[in-house]
Image (cartoon, rainbow, N blue to C red; front, side, top):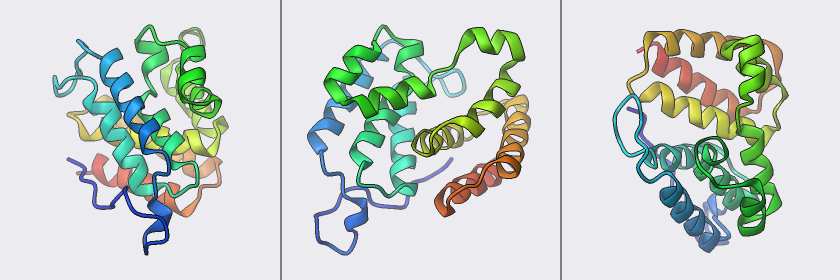
Length: 189
């Protein structure tokens, strides 16, 4: 199982100021929304309450991504599956959490019509190449948790193919490369 080693809370001006969550109230609100809207849902792999997944994705994200928008990115990670798996809407997310959060959640939401046309693997290959850098961080954190939670051999194989495709077709930041390396390491265990 993947473990988080990096702190995500710090005080401004401290030696770890790049980890600052500047809007803790917004993050806590997103935490509550995610837990509320995913209530009664469970993970296929582990059987854990589904809410554990977006919570873990947000921790993974915070351990790899350093940004002045970290609060919004964590909120988007906490709600990354809400548009496709709950009745929460883009408008509510934009109003309650900022347009950036809503846009990232929408960007991370799968298009079932497109998946039916081209297949899930090809859809994800195209998506990883075309999404914003912020959304890519969240998507990689999501994939890292997915391959850490009792993945099927098919998921592991497809994930390795996705990571290979991503490395060949998109310029990645140092931290994005670090997440990809961790995903590959977990897949190869």
